[in-house]
Figure 1 (cartoon, rainbow, N blue to C red):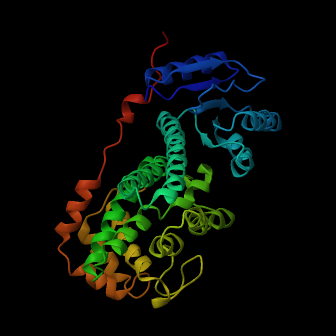
Figure 2 (cartoon, rainbow, N blue to C red; figure 1 turned 180 degrees about the horizontal axis):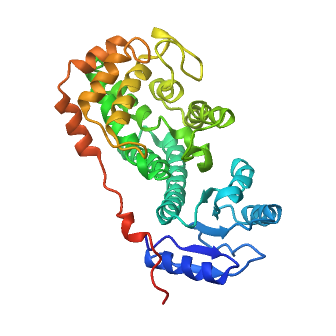
Figure 3 (cartoon, one colour; figure 1 turned 180 degrees about the vertical axis):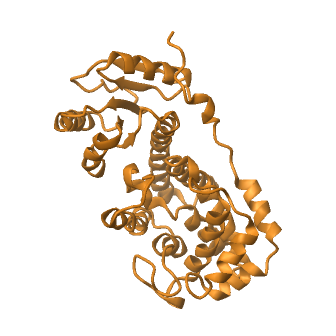
Length: 365
């Protein structure tokens, strides 16, 4: 990760030295400063910059005012506030209004590493999407003469979608790779359910890949909260299907993609959200996705339990058929050998960097 330079701003000399040593040990170029009253100068070619700021226990208004000015003068700047406990809670409004991009606990090396990776990858994904949009506008004028370029753009677009969701998954190392795995499950399950049209199958794959796109707008303090969520926090979480649908609607993706994003938390008995749809009122592709999503959730590692096997997942799906899941879709799943799903998980699982080796700052040089 040597390309991801950061600007480290912290008044405390000891903490600044420790954090600088830790980041340098990861191969990150660090510009460490005690304070900064003016935003960094924007280079001729902006490739984005990440600023790590240790938030003071008092003076959040001063911090927010300074950061807002930086954002105004340099829109490519990503700002991660390093805070924990009550200080982090006081900064939640700055996360919601976009003044801050992320919150990270400076005493948790894995969280800090993940936050930096997430911001760098999101910046690359955003620039990739901008490039794809520019290419698409040009191709509309030349489509009849440049079908080959159109196919190349489609491949680049798929790569951009995967990068976008990889950036989102990186916010939580416990669920990294979830989007790619559940996309493969959904494709295979849809095919087994009788969907044969290649375009429809690919749209279901894309919808499954993008199902949690709306979570990019959910603050880390809520999305990664270790304890139970309160009613207001659940209200924020429940917005993500509509937020994700709004995000892709302007890109004019096909119906199946939008249906999965908007309806992936609907339940067959009508107790889901955001619309409380019931039975066949839920789009078929969303009913297929619900089974694939639970299959991955049950067989994946979570902070509160280890991964369970596919037989346990099968029992979970059978038990909730007719309540959470479409019974016919569950029957389709039961008709396939468990080895099919085990093979997909093996092929899509990625191994994260060994954070155990990064828990202590590197010696000062």
